[in-house]
Image 1 (cartoon, rainbow, N blue to C red):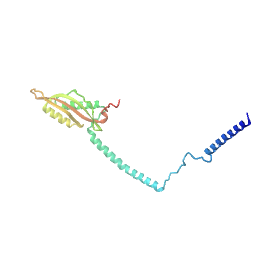
Image 2: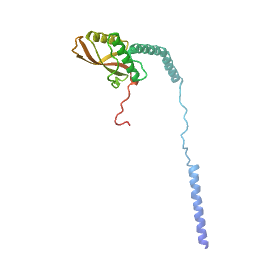
Image 3: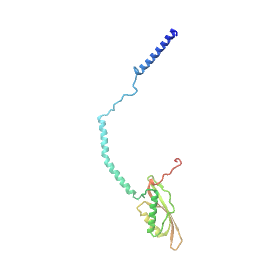
Image 4: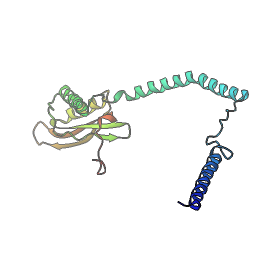
Length: 199
């Protein structure tokens, strides 16, 4: 190896070390900057803290009045919802409607046992639902009038959704009745209908 080549390699190594040293100094020395911003203490003044305390005191003072108003509204709601048919399932609600229908028919002197149709429960607004039972029976016209009056006087919210009356043409002057009785239930008893988008 010639002296020129050796000197050339030494110069290149020296330059490389010098560049590396300058890079290290630039990074950690003279040109170093902090990556994180210095923490700034939150400025909290006494007047600001007093204002917050006053707001919290007002809210605390209003809480008992709001609780009384809520209790009053809940009591009102319970009073208004006394007529809802309370049941665990829509089938239990239908069974209750059938029992009411049969008991009322028996009290008015005619037989109305069994159910011809059991329509699907349907929503009645966003908070309630409606369950129905359909029944065919034969009775006298006076018995039918008394039966409908007795249904209207039930403690639950009941109504005849549909009623069809036909003459039988016999000597007792009885009529053939097809009646659908409906009651109001909580919305949770009405199954949600699934559209095409949900599988």
